[in-house]
Image 1 (cartoon, rainbow, N blue to C red):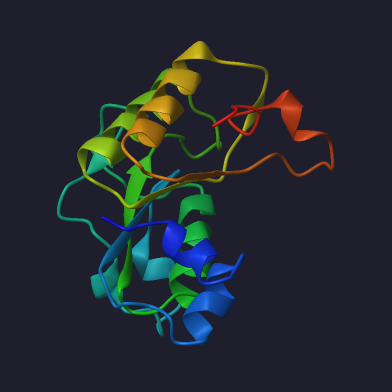
Image 2 (image 1 turned 90 degrees about the horizontal axis):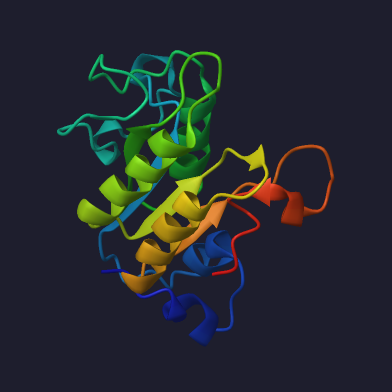
Length: 171
């Protein structure tokens, strides 16, 4: 399991600078991307597709059992992550929202719990909503208890993140 203190102990607050300076131990790191899924045929051809873990399909949005991205956002998040990290970092796409970019608190909760069960090293949630949720609070606390850092979005409109779930969860 990835130890997040390796970054701060080395005096870095930015993953790209840390890896660029050659500090990666080359341990395998899996980042669960909870979003709209992934569509590999739309990705930049320079990205090594072997870094995308698709052997198990995680789809908590609907009953289709497909993590195919019909929105594009999940694919874009995976592309950004894979293009800025070394080869030992892989992504685990988990579909929590549909083509319209909407999901439910339950779909995000189940996605977080699946990432924990899959032993992801980091969880990325680049989606948000206004309000609070005891259910998402529980899931993020579960990740915290499992020593899995959760990186979340806080909206795109320059408002205080205390208004946005899951960014307003204090863990």
